[in-house]
Amino acid sequence: MSTIEIDFLTTDFYRAISFKNGEAPDLTSLDILFYGNGIMVNNNFKDPITFTTESFINAFESQIAAGEVEQFMERELYSKTEIFGKVAQRVSVYEYNFADHDSHGLPRGINFIQFVLVENNWRILSMAWCDENENHVIPMEYLR
Image 1 (spheres, one colour):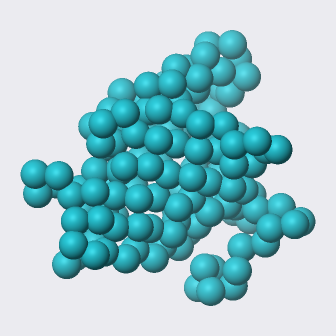
Image 2 (cartoon, helix red, strand yellow):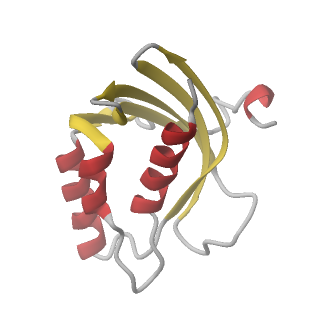
């Protein structure tokens, strides 16, 4: 089975949360990408921060409105997708930046994304991510 639709879903996710200064992200499109309420887990802190798609959108919009985030870019550097029947998992290595979108050598992390096939369409079921740091370095096999 082809991963093309999953590739597009992942690209659409990163595109939806990315925006330049003076613009607004297209966060409403996240509802279309996720199945049900979706589950998103930021595991960068002492305790995981869990969101539904709706609470993620609300939190991100609040940060933008408060001026805490003026622009943001996240893009995929490497991916590996495995499919079995109507479920799939993707390892998605990303880089991100809160400033210049054209920079290189940016901070990175890994996003584990789970997908389900519903009515012949793939949807994101859940995702959990962690940024790279001195204690957690992205394995070379994920940087090819």
